[in-house]
Length: 419
Image (cartoon, rainbow, N blue to C red; front, side, top):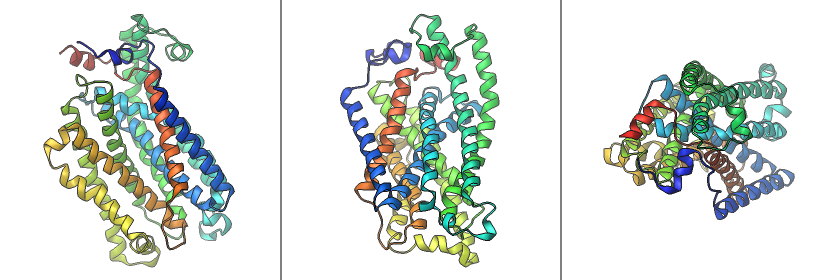
């Protein structure tokens, strides 16, 4: 199998080339600008705007990172053989999880700005809605989920790193030595990895549904403490997986283009990813409709308030945009088989979904805490969002530069590579 010279290092584990200085400089500049904008915002008169956009981006980028591991776990549970080259791309998104946990801790300092019940407690909900308990339970839940996700990543990476060292293709650094400590034969390590992944995958899937439902209830629904919905948790974590699949498809297209992976990521992979995005488009919309219908039919004030705010000015145009970007346009366009198989068209429609889902997270959070009659989005929000984007990109690129992006020790991948 002939390989392009510019990704031989990634394939065989030799010392990778450093990131382009211009790209690294741009990302570091955006990250710095985002941090400065956030610090300036919370210290000045725009503190609520800074905290609410921080929460929006925390939910959005943390969701993408966790969805990558969930996607890899789904592939393992379902014994899907088509996703080998895409699986590691999804797993690489988990590199943002440690950063996500630190950002969650930062949210504690914005509790009085975001959660009205901190300064005006609700006696009937005080046992559940109190800041120490909320951040303790959510912190422990995220710590367990993120810890198991990183453990999943360890068992997925270990056979590849050991195989590279066995073949002398990689000079082990301290991190690689730590990850391959106690190395046995490649056959034994494969078996050990498969056993561990088979155990971890269903646990992560169940825990993901539980933890992200908890996050939805605590960090989104409690922003409007008088509103409640038992279906909101399911709607939230399914939407998050929809977002993650669209992001994975986008990164797969970019990886194929810039690493010249035509031999590894093919139109068939795009077709399969496109079908998954289409399926979750329908599932997310179904849950949204199932959420809306009983609230509309019941017409109870404590339930309808959440929807009515978002159906009126100034939020109504944003709600219409979300519906079009996340359902109407993807549903119509992804009916085409050719659209799903072509890198450019799949990238465009998935980019639309990703932007639409960011707006959906924005629409879930901001109207609950913002009382003005205009939509708060300007330079402050743009800079903080770009800062989050830069942080996620730096984590991903750091992972790609440190670990192989192809599952080299996977027997199915080796079979496909010999074809």
